[in-house]
Image (cartoon, rainbow, N blue to C red; front, side, top):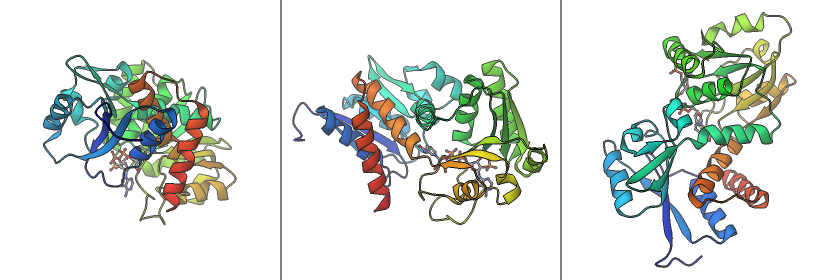
Length: 291
Ligand code: NAP
């Protein structure tokens, strides 16, 4: 597509930003759907997030994604925040409106779409979450709001898990989330023949440290019916290999990345992305990862 005076500018802000795959998603969709827009990465130095958001608004940037480490810091730079993003306490998508940007959390809606497209059910399920960092908190909220029967939130730092459990239970009005130290997974394994959906939200196993999993004990994996790793580099993590070796189904986080982008694109352009375009972007992302 030729850039011209009418081309609308979108982008992603973060630090580091050089490895982002988001331009692949949005520029492919723009081309495929004939929308005059361009999507570029913006490296934002520490302490410059407010200046970056103000500057983007002044330059008439139509929308932005926000990545590590600014998903929480950006909250104070917005004129409004979607209810779920406010409850999660983080945003990854900004949409231009009168006077400033509105914040959304399409990691939340995107993971939900990704899991649905893989046929994964949350309602009434017993779920183990590994990790209570930024994404772990969002996933705990997602499971609680979509009526999981029980969520065991395991984290190395137990205080962090307890804080997330208390906050999410209060917001959703349930007692669904129970915080546990990571090593207490043994208690869950000992509870007979129960099989769990396990969502892996830690950074352990991500490239280049691919020979590690947050839990390495095979006994744990015999209790996993479905393992969903939010990491997508490498394509198959050690966590996923352990799940599959013990008879479970395993998925990586690329569809979450895909659908958080699709949802942002739909918010910005007020459109529905057709499934053929979704598939085209997914293929392109896979190809990019193989290179
Ligand atoms: P974060 O806030 O830094 O949290 C990291 C988590 O990993 C914490 O729970 C931390 O536990 C745990 N952890 C780190 N090192 C550990 C170790 N040696 N042993 C045990 N636990 C350890 O990161 P985040 O933003 O939540 O992101 C987590 C993962 O999600 C990343 O790998 C990222 O690639 C993935 N992600 C995927 C997508 C997607 O679209 N697919 C989007 C965003 C993020 P402590 O609290 O004990 O330190």
